[in-house]
Image (cartoon, rainbow, N blue to C red; front, side, top):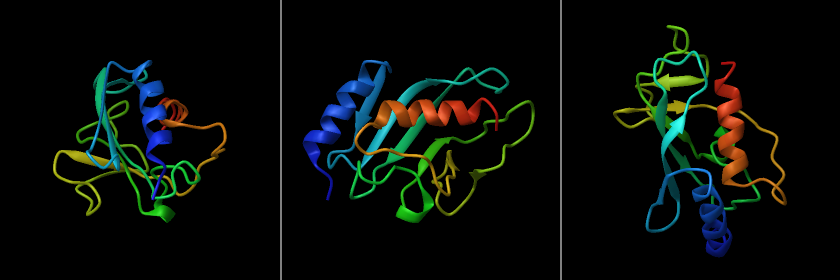
Amino acid sequence: MWNSSIVIAHLRHLSTVCDRVSASRDLSVITIEGVVLPPGWNRAHTRMKVELPEDYPLSPPGVNGNLTRILVEAGLRYRGYKPADYYEGHQWAPPGWAWWCYQKMEWNPGHDNLVSLLELVRTDMSKP
């Protein structure tokens, strides 16, 4: 199980760059409202949910191998197309959400946190 003091510190840091951040009672799911999307998307903002792996921050959130997900609102399109690694209606995406799939990502547990994760996802969204 993750260290709740680390998760809370990372949530506080995330709340300095995002207006609306919340967490499930057990801190296993982080919800970020109003994530600004890069140009080219059919919306200016989206919601994002991040499931934390049990050994966070040793393992990055949302990587398929640790059975956690990064979810964004369903219905997103980039320049009119559904991007690769974005799955609507998938068994891992509840209704109204789409799974943004990562097979792997560069992650340094001594440096990376929820803010760097958000920026990594937004960078990937700028060139899906």
